[in-house]
Amino acid sequence: MNIRHTAAITGLLLSTIAGPSLAADSAGQSGQGAHTVIDIAGHQVPVVAGGLYDRYRSNPPLSVIQAEAPGLDLSWFKELKKVKVDIGFESYSPNFYYRNSRVTAIFTADLARLKELMPAKVLEQVQPVQVWPGRGLVALTAYAYDYCDNDSYNEVALSIVTNRPGGSNLGPFTLIGQSMSKDFWGYVLKLPVNTELAKVRGVVGYNLPKWLTGIDMKDGKDSVTFEIKDHETGKTDVVLETKKLDGLSEKAELVTNSFTNLDAQGRLTYGHAVSRQLRHASSSSAEAVKLTLGDGSLSGYIRSLKLGRMLKYEYVPEFQSALYAPQPLQSILKD
Image 1 (cartoon, rainbow, N blue to C red):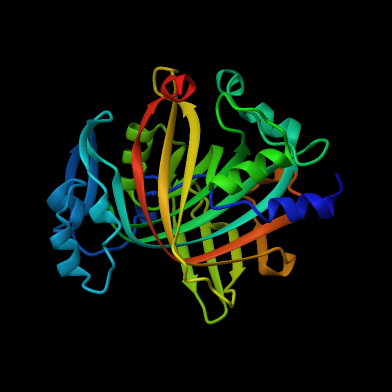
Image 2 (spheres, rainbow, N blue to C red; image 1 turned 120 degrees about the horizontal axis):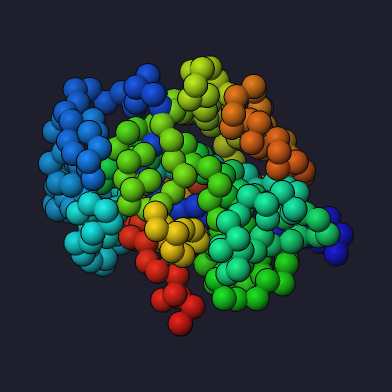
């Protein structure tokens, strides 16, 4: 299958693989006014004093959200039920993200390297999708969570596109199947965030590879730019500059993004988020995305993937999401 055909098939695909999840040395901590310190699973975590998390610990009444943000459409959240869960600390599932935006760029990458980066136990259940010989796919997604149960933060996800656990891996045809069902699967490689709250919740509760660093989002007239700092030097390391696309669809669509990983005990688990995309557009033009790598550790890691052609770019300036607590992978395999 040639590159043109594969690009067209991949163009059917993609919402982000790593759905919303939970965000720099103290200099990278998102500035939101005064902070107070709370205990989460033995970690002393600064949170916004009087913020949503300080007051409600992931379970704010929707009446409070409506009062604080009267312009938000909360109809979808009213259909969802939160339940108390133990994810290494007491929380509620799903976690709600009320007002957010994201940009996603899909690149080809070296298939052998992608397999090398996945734990053997995970590879027994899922594999990178091969788009043509020797090439897989990675998704680089930058999120701005402006208003959610965890207050607000920025996050950048680097993920391998995989098949569904227990399902067949038929390359581009697997992508078509996931696109038709709007049910996407991946393995998360890197997930820097810019608040301690997001980092601790993500690592302890969701088994995700998070660390704290500065992530600055610049919303320009014609572009959206995310600058990721190196967590050791504080210098800008990765810059993802993307175009704002015209012709946005305002037809709301639901997309499920799931990931397979291991918990702290080495057991196979999966997590998933359902997103309600309210305004969105996509492009396959290479001019829509500019990725600049520096001298830091994340740039070095990305270089090791031997990225190739950018196959698809998604611009989603408005979406909502619900992130569910992780579950044993066996429950999916039984189904």
